[in-house]
Image (cartoon, rainbow, N blue to C red):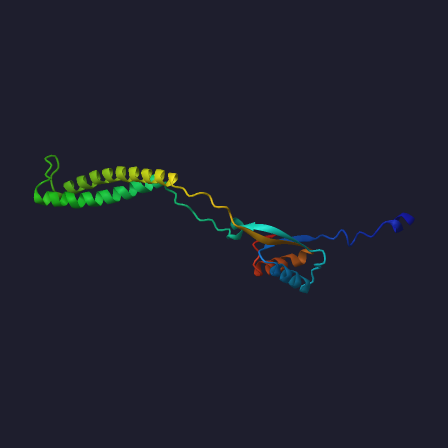
Length: 183
């Protein structure tokens, strides 16, 4: 009986808690978060705030831009084929009507136009691929020097709270513009 009396009461210390970790760019937002959390019943006396460096990558939203699925060489070849086919069609039809382009194996305007488009597209695709390759090589040679990533100070705050208040606390942190939130 004396052993039980000497054991400390762990009912309060064994309660489950959740940690809210939020990253802000401005310290006044951290103070406002702590004030609002105190207002909903969170004990903020053990909250910790750290000054950290926030780089440009962390400042941006988490949206990722989708790149073009085609390589620059393929895009150049397709653009060249379209442009070459259109120009060859106009030139081929003009030469057919003038009588300068009459192929003995191909009879009729439609077949001459089709032949002109195919030849023009093939020549245009090759020219487009060659030009885009040359443009890529020139762009690689003319790369500007790497600029250092700009950094500024940010504030990381951690607060321990009971699980029922975690969802409301996260809403408050998001409403105040937290860049990152972990629960």
